[in-house]
Length: 389
Image 1 (cartoon, helix red, strand yellow):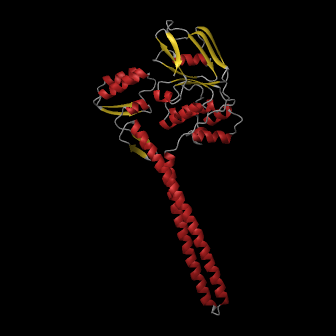
Image 2: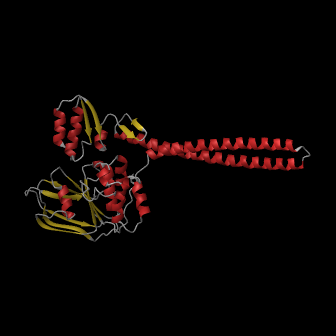
Image 3: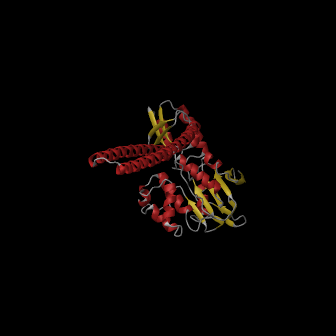
């Protein structure tokens, strides 16, 4: 990514378009990117879900089902405006539903009054000493009038129903993604992973060995510059790689989400893979949970390769988190990459409430702070350092 960005600076273009330029950058490189963007004199369009990067932008434009919405400020301004929009949309929906309910009551009253008048008219005509032709005309006029009233009621209800649908669609555009937290007992004394004098592969032998103990209460964030071995460390804990030296003992009750989403079969449907991971919850429940992730009925039937990057991340999370039995240790490597802001907030909420052990690698400072982690593991100088977050 840094090489690609260097090429962009050197091309001396009039206008530059960057698509998720902060993905895979460490914090130092991200700050350097922001500095370079401030020095850029040409036109600039950045597609990003990185809140640190968005905070440095002069204007945020959101693409939604209703089109492009211009918010005219940085991320903080955009976030406040979105909250106001959601609140206003919910208020309008409640108001439209109340209006429909009130009108339905009025229509029922009018219908009851009309039926009473028709019944009274029928009795009066039956008792009246008039020619049948006159009585028939009176009945016809009454039925015609009643028909017009019913048509007016039907049109009014349809108008109110459409207003409710319109208000509901506005709420739908601002609907939150829901990610359910797996049910697992928190095991405070259980050793879920233990590393003893572990030397990581693919890393310079000058790097120190690692000592780490992970119990059921651990919430660890791994931070550091690119190339320091963060992803490699997760792979060793997950059993995907063997250490050069030392010992690594881990539990089988773990779920590993890597940056390349290797746990998701690209040629099979999401629904098929989720059902395979959990054979007890039932298809209806799992379909509902996938829908709450923003994966509709059509998408979960498609091969996973046809999904977008963010959709594949959510599909992989579903396969890992909704598995039976539920994992007790989550190993997450840059899980917020490719996710939209709504999905990132949902992931933060779920992980914050997660009652198992958690080890997460991320360069997203907003994301890490919102998880309320307890420990920070980082490479400083010639030693791995574990300290309170």
